[in-house]
Image (tube, rainbow, N blue to C red; front, side):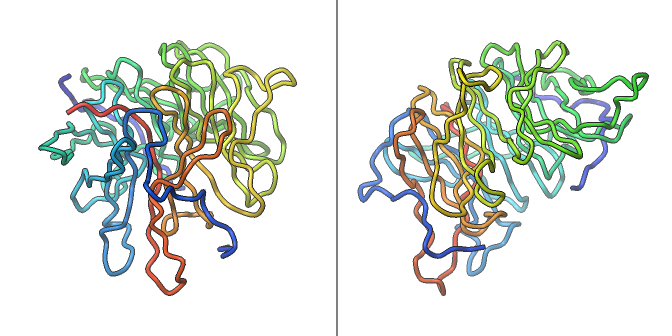
Length: 347
């Protein structure tokens, strides 16, 4: 695939308690393979010594089969939300310094992975709601950014192989007075490329919606009044979605899964990471075989300095803490392992 940067970008930049008794899922003493296949990319500040430094956040690749972790990027930008392309040959991430989505080609020397010379392919995505998605053919990226017409956040698609402006997928009708009423963020694209699921939020609610990529009317998948549902991800077969939500308490965020249809008594959302206390389990990502999910665990809402990369069974079976970096000694330096995404890397 030849990557090109669109010639014209019409978008503008949008800005946007620790509890010591609580802990992440237990780590296996042998760091055994949790199953699922593929590998997990995530962001970490583990090499920014002696103190955490966001500018030193880098992308790492964890191989569940061997329990080994490789540093993939090495630069001066702050990477967030890394995701592998469907063919496994490319890595994309949000560059919070240049405020762009960057893409680089994965390479491997022996057992060491790297991704040199990233190139910006999207200018001014929404950095505070930065999760984005590849289309199944690997030719496009779908992301959230500010609509220059209404000033709200919409979903855009950019074809990486063409010199064309991005296409707005969720623009409201200004003539009907709809423009600027809602914000669409954090998209996921179905494996067949036909549908997108995303968070839609306005002044009163935040729910998940599904719509065809061709622009048909959106369908509400959740309809809660006091909770926020976000970070959706399609299962590899497209039959289920996972997401995170604070349904039990404002400061207790769990990972849920349900069929990729509107929530109902026949299609309930199941809490996969229910726990006693206020913890944050966010941004689930399915394993290539659909049996596992990885997610970002933390004690704090921001989660940058105490994050762990964990797994849970897609059927709710307990998972494991894959990184287990945070020390039990409160005086020791915390490590932030965050924003995992499961994929199948191919050098």
